[in-house]
Image: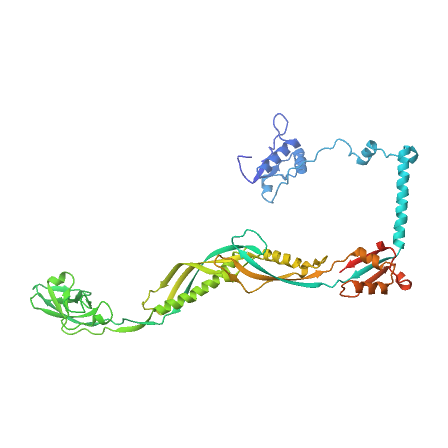
Length: 495
Protein backbone atom coordinates (compact mmCIF):
# COMPACT_ATOMS: atom_id res chain seq x y z
CA UNK A 1 0.00 0.00 0.00
CA UNK A 2 2.88 2.41 0.72
CA UNK A 3 4.56 1.55 -2.60
CA UNK A 4 1.42 2.17 -4.73
CA UNK A 5 1.06 5.80 -3.49
CA UNK A 6 -2.55 6.32 -4.65
CA UNK A 7 -5.56 7.99 -3.10
CA UNK A 8 -7.80 4.92 -3.39
CA UNK A 9 -6.86 1.34 -2.43
CA UNK A 10 -9.13 -1.61 -3.36
CA UNK A 11 -8.51 -5.01 -1.69
CA UNK A 12 -10.04 -7.96 -3.59
CA UNK A 13 -10.54 -11.28 -1.70
CA UNK A 14 -10.00 -14.45 -3.76
CA UNK A 15 -13.16 -16.34 -4.71
CA UNK A 16 -11.58 -19.71 -3.87
CA UNK A 17 -10.78 -20.73 -0.33
CA UNK A 18 -7.09 -21.65 0.21
CA UNK A 19 -6.17 -25.32 0.49
CA UNK A 20 -5.70 -25.04 4.22
CA UNK A 21 -9.34 -23.96 4.52
CA UNK A 22 -8.69 -20.60 6.32
CA UNK A 23 -9.75 -17.47 4.32
CA UNK A 24 -7.28 -14.55 4.74
CA UNK A 25 -7.84 -11.45 6.92
CA UNK A 26 -11.03 -12.59 8.62
CA UNK A 27 -10.21 -11.06 12.01
CA UNK A 28 -11.59 -7.61 12.80
CA UNK A 29 -8.14 -6.59 14.15
CA UNK A 30 -6.56 -7.33 10.75
CA UNK A 31 -9.04 -5.07 8.97
CA UNK A 32 -8.60 -2.36 11.63
CA UNK A 33 -4.80 -2.36 11.18
CA UNK A 34 -5.16 -2.18 7.38
CA UNK A 35 -7.69 0.64 7.70
CA UNK A 36 -5.42 2.66 10.02
CA UNK A 37 -2.40 2.14 7.75
CA UNK A 38 -4.37 3.38 4.72
CA UNK A 39 -5.56 6.39 6.74
CA UNK A 40 -1.96 7.29 7.70
CA UNK A 41 -1.01 7.12 3.99
CA UNK A 42 -3.92 9.46 3.15
CA UNK A 43 -5.71 6.78 1.05
CA UNK A 44 -9.37 5.67 0.93
CA UNK A 45 -9.75 1.86 1.50
CA UNK A 46 -12.54 -0.38 0.10
CA UNK A 47 -13.07 -4.17 -0.04
CA UNK A 48 -14.37 -6.56 -2.71
CA UNK A 49 -15.36 -9.85 -1.02
CA UNK A 50 -18.20 -12.35 -0.60
CA UNK A 51 -17.07 -13.46 2.86
CA UNK A 52 -19.89 -12.57 5.28
CA UNK A 53 -17.54 -12.37 8.27
CA UNK A 54 -15.27 -9.89 6.52
CA UNK A 55 -18.28 -7.89 5.31
CA UNK A 56 -19.66 -7.64 8.89
CA UNK A 57 -16.30 -6.46 10.25
CA UNK A 58 -15.96 -3.91 7.40
CA UNK A 59 -19.44 -2.49 8.08
CA UNK A 60 -18.57 -2.04 11.75
CA UNK A 61 -15.28 -0.27 10.88
CA UNK A 62 -16.85 2.01 8.22
CA UNK A 63 -15.16 0.36 5.21
CA UNK A 64 -17.08 0.30 1.88
CA UNK A 65 -17.70 -3.29 0.63
CA UNK A 66 -18.62 -4.23 -2.97
CA UNK A 67 -19.53 -7.47 -4.69
CA UNK A 68 -17.23 -6.86 -7.68
CA UNK A 69 -14.58 -4.50 -9.01
CA UNK A 70 -17.03 -3.14 -11.61
CA UNK A 71 -19.40 -2.07 -8.83
CA UNK A 72 -16.72 0.22 -7.37
CA UNK A 73 -16.64 2.21 -10.60
CA UNK A 74 -20.37 2.98 -10.61
CA UNK A 75 -20.52 5.03 -7.44
CA UNK A 76 -18.40 7.35 -5.30
CA UNK A 77 -17.12 5.83 -2.08
CA UNK A 78 -15.07 6.94 0.92
CA UNK A 79 -13.96 5.19 4.08
CA UNK A 80 -14.59 6.88 7.42
CA UNK A 81 -12.09 7.48 10.24
CA UNK A 82 -10.84 4.11 11.60
CA UNK A 83 -12.39 3.77 15.05
CA UNK A 84 -13.41 0.76 17.15
CA UNK A 85 -15.40 0.81 20.36
CA UNK A 86 -13.92 -1.03 23.32
CA UNK A 87 -15.82 -4.06 24.50
CA UNK A 88 -17.19 -3.53 28.03
CA UNK A 89 -16.82 -6.64 30.14
CA UNK A 90 -19.05 -5.59 32.99
CA UNK A 91 -21.93 -3.28 33.88
CA UNK A 92 -21.36 0.49 34.00
CA UNK A 93 -20.39 1.52 37.61
CA UNK A 94 -22.72 3.72 39.68
CA UNK A 95 -20.75 6.75 41.01
CA UNK A 96 -23.43 7.65 43.59
CA UNK A 97 -23.35 4.21 45.11
CA UNK A 98 -19.56 4.23 45.25
CA UNK A 99 -19.52 7.63 47.01
CA UNK A 100 -22.15 6.41 49.48
CA UNK A 101 -20.01 3.40 50.35
CA UNK A 102 -16.82 5.43 50.78
CA UNK A 103 -18.38 8.35 52.75
CA UNK A 104 -21.51 7.45 54.65
CA UNK A 105 -23.61 10.46 55.71
CA UNK A 106 -22.57 11.47 59.25
CA UNK A 107 -25.15 12.09 61.91
CA UNK A 108 -24.56 15.06 64.19
CA UNK A 109 -26.16 15.44 67.55
CA UNK A 110 -25.38 18.39 69.82
CA UNK A 111 -25.48 16.17 72.89
CA UNK A 112 -22.70 14.04 71.51
CA UNK A 113 -20.27 16.99 71.24
CA UNK A 114 -17.78 17.92 73.99
CA UNK A 115 -18.83 20.53 76.58
CA UNK A 116 -16.54 23.26 75.24
CA UNK A 117 -17.83 22.84 71.73
CA UNK A 118 -21.44 22.95 72.98
CA UNK A 119 -20.72 26.24 74.81
CA UNK A 120 -19.14 27.80 71.76
CA UNK A 121 -22.09 26.74 69.60
CA UNK A 122 -24.55 28.37 72.04
CA UNK A 123 -22.55 31.62 72.05
CA UNK A 124 -22.51 31.70 68.26
CA UNK A 125 -26.24 31.09 68.09
CA UNK A 126 -26.84 33.89 70.65
CA UNK A 127 -24.72 36.36 68.69
CA UNK A 128 -26.51 35.48 65.47
CA UNK A 129 -29.83 36.14 67.17
CA UNK A 130 -28.56 39.45 68.58
CA UNK A 131 -27.34 40.48 65.13
CA UNK A 132 -30.78 39.69 63.76
CA UNK A 133 -32.36 41.96 66.36
CA UNK A 134 -29.99 44.82 65.51
CA UNK A 135 -30.67 44.32 61.82
CA UNK A 136 -34.38 44.58 62.49
CA UNK A 137 -33.91 47.75 64.54
CA UNK A 138 -31.69 49.19 61.81
CA UNK A 139 -34.47 48.60 59.32
CA UNK A 140 -37.11 50.18 61.58
CA UNK A 141 -35.17 53.15 63.02
CA UNK A 142 -35.53 56.25 60.74
CA UNK A 143 -32.71 57.18 58.34
CA UNK A 144 -32.09 60.10 56.01
CA UNK A 145 -30.04 60.98 52.95
CA UNK A 146 -28.84 64.57 52.43
CA UNK A 147 -27.70 65.55 48.90
CA UNK A 148 -25.54 68.68 48.67
CA UNK A 149 -24.60 70.48 45.44
CA UNK A 150 -21.33 72.17 46.33
CA UNK A 151 -20.65 75.29 44.27
CA UNK A 152 -17.35 74.91 42.36
CA UNK A 153 -14.79 77.68 42.61
CA UNK A 154 -13.13 78.52 39.27
CA UNK A 155 -9.33 78.76 39.30
CA UNK A 156 -6.99 80.19 36.64
CA UNK A 157 -3.22 80.31 36.52
CA UNK A 158 -0.62 81.23 33.89
CA UNK A 159 2.85 79.70 34.06
CA UNK A 160 5.96 80.70 32.12
CA UNK A 161 7.72 77.63 30.76
CA UNK A 162 10.96 76.83 28.99
CA UNK A 163 11.42 73.79 26.73
CA UNK A 164 15.11 72.84 26.62
CA UNK A 165 16.55 70.10 24.34
CA UNK A 166 19.34 69.60 26.92
CA UNK A 167 16.89 68.73 29.72
CA UNK A 168 16.01 65.08 30.29
CA UNK A 169 13.06 65.51 32.64
CA UNK A 170 10.64 68.05 34.06
CA UNK A 171 12.58 70.37 36.35
CA UNK A 172 10.39 73.04 37.86
CA UNK A 173 9.20 75.25 35.00
CA UNK A 174 11.58 73.63 32.47
CA UNK A 175 10.38 70.71 30.36
CA UNK A 176 12.40 68.53 27.97
CA UNK A 177 12.29 69.06 24.21
CA UNK A 178 13.27 66.77 21.34
CA UNK A 179 14.87 67.96 18.08
CA UNK A 180 13.40 66.39 14.95
CA UNK A 181 15.18 66.52 11.57
CA UNK A 182 13.72 65.73 8.16
CA UNK A 183 14.78 65.96 4.50
CA UNK A 184 12.22 67.35 2.07
CA UNK A 185 12.42 67.76 -1.69
CA UNK A 186 10.17 69.15 -4.38
CA UNK A 187 10.25 70.37 -7.97
CA UNK A 188 8.56 73.55 -9.17
CA UNK A 189 8.10 75.14 -12.60
CA UNK A 190 8.01 78.84 -13.47
CA UNK A 191 7.42 80.62 -16.82
CA UNK A 192 10.58 82.42 -17.95
CA UNK A 193 10.66 86.18 -18.43
CA UNK A 194 14.02 86.71 -20.25
CA UNK A 195 14.58 87.15 -23.99
CA UNK A 196 17.32 85.76 -26.20
CA UNK A 197 18.02 85.59 -29.95
CA UNK A 198 18.27 82.06 -31.33
CA UNK A 199 19.02 80.86 -34.84
CA UNK A 200 15.99 80.50 -37.09
CA UNK A 201 16.17 79.45 -40.75
CA UNK A 202 19.26 78.07 -42.53
CA UNK A 203 20.93 80.12 -45.26
CA UNK A 204 21.08 78.69 -48.82
CA UNK A 205 22.70 79.54 -52.15
CA UNK A 206 24.68 78.09 -55.07
CA UNK A 207 28.33 77.17 -55.57
CA UNK A 208 30.32 76.43 -58.73
CA UNK A 209 32.67 73.40 -58.78
CA UNK A 210 35.63 73.62 -61.22
CA UNK A 211 37.73 70.67 -62.43
CA UNK A 212 41.41 71.31 -61.69
CA UNK A 213 42.72 67.75 -62.21
CA UNK A 214 41.32 66.94 -65.68
CA UNK A 215 39.64 63.70 -64.58
CA UNK A 216 35.90 63.14 -64.38
CA UNK A 217 34.41 63.30 -60.85
CA UNK A 218 31.14 62.56 -59.11
CA UNK A 219 30.00 65.06 -56.51
CA UNK A 220 27.72 63.12 -54.06
CA UNK A 221 24.72 64.71 -52.40
CA UNK A 222 25.73 65.95 -48.93
CA UNK A 223 29.26 66.97 -49.95
CA UNK A 224 30.59 69.45 -47.39
CA UNK A 225 32.02 72.81 -48.46
CA UNK A 226 32.95 75.66 -46.16
CA UNK A 227 34.14 79.20 -45.85
CA UNK A 228 37.90 79.49 -45.76
CA UNK A 229 39.69 81.08 -42.86
CA UNK A 230 40.53 84.19 -44.86
CA UNK A 231 36.95 85.50 -44.68
CA UNK A 232 36.57 87.51 -41.48
CA UNK A 233 33.62 86.57 -39.26
CA UNK A 234 32.56 83.56 -41.34
CA UNK A 235 35.41 81.11 -40.85
CA UNK A 236 34.44 77.44 -40.72
CA UNK A 237 30.81 78.02 -41.75
CA UNK A 238 29.88 74.80 -43.51
CA UNK A 239 27.38 74.08 -46.29
CA UNK A 240 26.00 70.80 -47.68
CA UNK A 241 25.21 70.12 -51.35
CA UNK A 242 21.53 69.42 -51.94
CA UNK A 243 21.87 67.10 -54.98
CA UNK A 244 24.44 64.87 -56.65
CA UNK A 245 26.31 66.14 -59.73
CA UNK A 246 28.92 64.90 -62.24
CA UNK A 247 31.70 67.03 -63.74
CA UNK A 248 33.40 66.12 -67.05
CA UNK A 249 37.02 65.13 -67.14
CA UNK A 250 38.73 68.22 -68.52
CA UNK A 251 40.52 71.04 -66.82
CA UNK A 252 38.30 74.07 -66.38
CA UNK A 253 35.01 72.20 -66.61
CA UNK A 254 32.42 73.64 -64.19
CA UNK A 255 29.06 72.74 -62.73
CA UNK A 256 26.67 74.66 -60.45
CA UNK A 257 25.15 72.97 -57.35
CA UNK A 258 22.67 74.18 -54.69
CA UNK A 259 23.97 74.27 -51.11
CA UNK A 260 22.45 74.89 -47.65
CA UNK A 261 24.12 75.96 -44.42
CA UNK A 262 24.59 73.24 -41.79
CA UNK A 263 23.80 75.54 -38.86
CA UNK A 264 20.78 77.86 -38.85
CA UNK A 265 21.06 81.58 -38.22
CA UNK A 266 22.84 84.64 -39.54
CA UNK A 267 26.36 83.10 -39.83
CA UNK A 268 25.18 81.24 -42.93
CA UNK A 269 24.66 84.53 -44.83
CA UNK A 270 28.16 84.82 -46.35
CA UNK A 271 29.30 87.18 -49.13
CA UNK A 272 30.25 86.12 -52.66
CA UNK A 273 33.50 84.17 -53.11
CA UNK A 274 33.52 83.25 -49.38
CA UNK A 275 32.97 79.52 -49.91
CA UNK A 276 36.30 78.17 -51.20
CA UNK A 277 37.08 74.87 -49.45
CA UNK A 278 35.90 71.32 -50.17
CA UNK A 279 36.02 68.78 -47.31
CA UNK A 280 37.19 65.28 -48.22
CA UNK A 281 39.18 63.78 -51.18
CA UNK A 282 37.37 65.90 -53.80
CA UNK A 283 39.35 68.88 -52.54
CA UNK A 284 42.39 67.65 -54.58
CA UNK A 285 40.42 67.35 -57.84
CA UNK A 286 37.97 70.25 -57.72
CA UNK A 287 37.76 73.87 -56.68
CA UNK A 288 34.62 75.57 -55.38
CA UNK A 289 33.36 79.14 -55.08
CA UNK A 290 30.02 80.90 -54.50
CA UNK A 291 29.53 83.48 -57.20
CA UNK A 292 26.58 85.04 -55.38
CA UNK A 293 26.15 85.66 -51.62
CA UNK A 294 24.14 83.10 -49.66
CA UNK A 295 20.98 84.30 -47.93
CA UNK A 296 17.99 83.19 -45.89
CA UNK A 297 19.69 82.70 -42.52
CA UNK A 298 17.54 84.31 -39.79
CA UNK A 299 17.33 84.66 -36.03
CA UNK A 300 14.31 84.54 -33.70
CA UNK A 301 13.61 86.03 -30.29
CA UNK A 302 12.70 83.38 -27.75
CA UNK A 303 11.88 83.29 -24.05
CA UNK A 304 14.95 82.53 -21.99
CA UNK A 305 15.99 81.94 -18.40
CA UNK A 306 16.85 85.17 -16.59
CA UNK A 307 18.59 85.57 -13.23
CA UNK A 308 15.42 87.10 -11.79
CA UNK A 309 13.52 83.94 -12.79
CA UNK A 310 15.92 81.76 -10.83
CA UNK A 311 15.75 83.99 -7.76
CA UNK A 312 11.96 84.12 -7.80
CA UNK A 313 11.58 80.36 -8.34
CA UNK A 314 14.01 79.56 -5.54
CA UNK A 315 12.24 81.86 -3.08
CA UNK A 316 8.81 80.35 -3.87
CA UNK A 317 10.02 76.75 -3.71
CA UNK A 318 12.01 77.39 -0.52
CA UNK A 319 8.91 78.79 1.20
CA UNK A 320 6.89 75.80 0.01
CA UNK A 321 9.47 73.39 1.41
CA UNK A 322 9.40 75.23 4.72
CA UNK A 323 5.68 74.49 4.98
CA UNK A 324 6.03 70.88 3.87
CA UNK A 325 8.85 70.36 6.37
CA UNK A 326 6.42 71.25 9.18
CA UNK A 327 4.07 68.50 7.97
CA UNK A 328 6.99 66.06 7.61
CA UNK A 329 8.17 66.78 11.16
CA UNK A 330 4.62 66.43 12.49
CA UNK A 331 4.42 62.97 10.88
CA UNK A 332 7.43 61.85 12.95
CA UNK A 333 6.05 62.99 16.30
CA UNK A 334 5.51 60.50 19.08
CA UNK A 335 2.08 60.17 20.75
CA UNK A 336 1.31 63.26 22.81
CA UNK A 337 3.96 65.47 21.19
CA UNK A 338 3.50 68.71 19.26
CA UNK A 339 6.00 70.69 17.21
CA UNK A 340 6.55 74.39 17.88
CA UNK A 341 6.11 76.02 14.47
CA UNK A 342 8.49 78.86 15.34
CA UNK A 343 11.35 76.34 15.61
CA UNK A 344 10.88 74.82 12.16
CA UNK A 345 13.57 76.12 9.82
CA UNK A 346 15.86 74.93 7.04
CA UNK A 347 19.31 73.94 8.24
CA UNK A 348 21.04 73.50 4.88
CA UNK A 349 20.40 73.08 1.16
CA UNK A 350 21.40 69.60 0.03
CA UNK A 351 20.67 69.91 -3.71
CA UNK A 352 19.67 72.76 -6.05
CA UNK A 353 19.26 71.79 -9.74
CA UNK A 354 18.03 74.28 -12.37
CA UNK A 355 16.91 73.19 -15.82
CA UNK A 356 17.73 74.74 -18.31
CA UNK A 357 20.77 76.78 -17.28
CA UNK A 358 20.86 80.56 -17.04
CA UNK A 359 20.40 82.30 -20.41
CA UNK A 360 19.21 79.18 -22.24
CA UNK A 361 16.13 79.58 -24.45
CA UNK A 362 13.09 78.01 -22.77
CA UNK A 363 9.51 78.89 -21.94
CA UNK A 364 9.67 77.18 -18.52
CA UNK A 365 12.32 77.04 -15.81
CA UNK A 366 12.43 73.98 -13.54
CA UNK A 367 14.05 73.81 -10.10
CA UNK A 368 14.52 70.72 -7.92
CA UNK A 369 15.39 71.73 -4.37
CA UNK A 370 16.23 69.39 -1.48
CA UNK A 371 16.79 70.80 1.99
CA UNK A 372 17.33 69.51 5.51
CA UNK A 373 14.91 71.05 8.00
CA UNK A 374 14.66 70.74 11.77
CA UNK A 375 12.12 71.53 14.44
CA UNK A 376 11.61 71.02 18.17
CA UNK A 377 8.95 68.71 19.61
CA UNK A 378 7.53 69.06 23.11
CA UNK A 379 5.38 66.54 24.97
CA UNK A 380 2.00 67.97 25.89
CA UNK A 381 1.86 65.76 28.99
CA UNK A 382 4.88 67.61 30.43
CA UNK A 383 3.17 70.97 29.95
CA UNK A 384 0.01 69.66 31.54
CA UNK A 385 1.92 68.31 34.53
CA UNK A 386 3.57 71.70 35.17
CA UNK A 387 0.26 73.53 34.68
CA UNK A 388 -1.58 71.18 37.05
CA UNK A 389 1.10 71.66 39.69
CA UNK A 390 0.66 75.43 39.46
CA UNK A 391 -3.13 75.10 39.54
CA UNK A 392 -3.12 72.82 42.58
CA UNK A 393 -0.90 75.31 44.39
CA UNK A 394 -3.78 77.81 44.23
CA UNK A 395 -6.35 75.44 45.75
CA UNK A 396 -7.98 76.65 48.99
CA UNK A 397 -7.32 74.63 52.10
CA UNK A 398 -9.12 71.31 52.01
CA UNK A 399 -10.48 71.84 48.46
CA UNK A 400 -9.89 69.36 45.63
CA UNK A 401 -9.50 69.87 41.92
CA UNK A 402 -12.09 68.35 39.60
CA UNK A 403 -9.99 66.63 36.87
CA UNK A 404 -12.79 66.72 34.30
CA UNK A 405 -12.88 70.53 34.42
CA UNK A 406 -9.15 71.12 33.89
CA UNK A 407 -8.18 72.80 30.60
CA UNK A 408 -4.62 73.64 29.58
CA UNK A 409 -3.87 75.96 26.63
CA UNK A 410 -0.59 77.24 25.19
CA UNK A 411 -0.28 80.96 24.51
CA UNK A 412 0.76 82.16 21.06
CA UNK A 413 3.72 84.27 22.16
CA UNK A 414 6.75 82.04 21.63
CA UNK A 415 10.43 83.01 21.75
CA UNK A 416 13.37 80.82 20.65
CA UNK A 417 16.90 81.74 21.71
CA UNK A 418 20.17 80.84 20.00
CA UNK A 419 20.64 77.71 22.13
CA UNK A 420 17.30 76.31 20.92
CA UNK A 421 15.41 76.88 24.17
CA UNK A 422 11.75 77.71 23.69
CA UNK A 423 10.08 80.13 26.05
CA UNK A 424 6.31 80.37 26.19
CA UNK A 425 3.48 80.30 28.71
CA UNK A 426 0.53 78.03 29.40
CA UNK A 427 -2.76 78.89 31.01
CA UNK A 428 -4.62 76.32 33.12
CA UNK A 429 -8.23 76.63 34.25
CA UNK A 430 -10.29 74.31 36.42
CA UNK A 431 -12.89 74.09 39.16
CA UNK A 432 -12.05 73.58 42.83
CA UNK A 433 -14.52 71.57 44.86
CA UNK A 434 -14.77 72.82 48.48
CA UNK A 435 -13.89 70.41 51.25
CA UNK A 436 -16.81 68.73 53.03
CA UNK A 437 -16.57 67.29 56.55
CA UNK A 438 -19.43 64.79 56.56
CA UNK A 439 -19.14 63.99 60.28
CA UNK A 440 -19.50 67.69 61.14
CA UNK A 441 -22.54 68.00 58.84
CA UNK A 442 -24.21 64.94 60.40
CA UNK A 443 -23.65 66.23 63.93
CA UNK A 444 -24.93 69.72 63.03
CA UNK A 445 -28.21 68.66 61.44
CA UNK A 446 -29.14 65.56 63.49
CA UNK A 447 -32.46 65.98 65.33
CA UNK A 448 -33.32 69.20 63.45
CA UNK A 449 -36.37 69.80 61.30
CA UNK A 450 -35.91 69.85 57.53
CA UNK A 451 -36.34 73.64 57.36
CA UNK A 452 -33.82 74.24 60.15
CA UNK A 453 -31.28 71.89 58.58
CA UNK A 454 -31.74 73.49 55.15
CA UNK A 455 -31.17 77.01 56.51
CA UNK A 456 -28.13 75.86 58.53
CA UNK A 457 -26.48 74.19 55.56
CA UNK A 458 -27.11 77.12 53.21
CA UNK A 459 -25.61 79.51 55.72
CA UNK A 460 -22.44 77.54 56.43
CA UNK A 461 -21.58 75.77 53.14
CA UNK A 462 -20.99 77.14 49.60
CA UNK A 463 -23.94 75.45 47.91
CA UNK A 464 -25.02 75.86 44.29
CA UNK A 465 -28.60 74.69 45.05
CA UNK A 466 -30.88 74.01 47.98
CA UNK A 467 -30.11 70.76 49.88
CA UNK A 468 -32.29 67.74 49.19
CA UNK A 469 -33.53 65.51 52.02
CA UNK A 470 -34.91 61.99 51.75
CA UNK A 471 -36.38 60.41 54.93
CA UNK A 472 -36.95 56.68 55.35
CA UNK A 473 -39.41 55.22 55.88
CA UNK A 474 -41.30 57.47 53.47
CA UNK A 475 -44.39 57.85 55.70
CA UNK A 476 -42.20 59.45 58.39
CA UNK A 477 -41.77 62.72 56.45
CA UNK A 478 -45.53 63.23 56.33
CA UNK A 479 -46.20 63.56 60.08
CA UNK A 480 -42.69 63.91 61.59
CA UNK A 481 -40.34 65.89 59.22
CA UNK A 482 -37.35 65.70 61.54
CA UNK A 483 -33.93 64.26 60.75
CA UNK A 484 -32.81 61.21 62.80
CA UNK A 485 -31.26 61.87 66.19
CA UNK A 486 -28.50 59.36 65.51
CA UNK A 487 -25.87 60.94 63.19
CA UNK A 488 -24.98 57.40 62.11
CA UNK A 489 -28.36 57.16 60.36
CA UNK A 490 -27.73 60.25 58.21
CA UNK A 491 -25.96 59.74 54.87
CA UNK A 492 -24.37 62.88 53.34
CA UNK A 493 -23.79 62.87 49.55
CA UNK A 494 -21.80 65.63 47.87
CA UNK A 495 -22.49 66.20 44.17
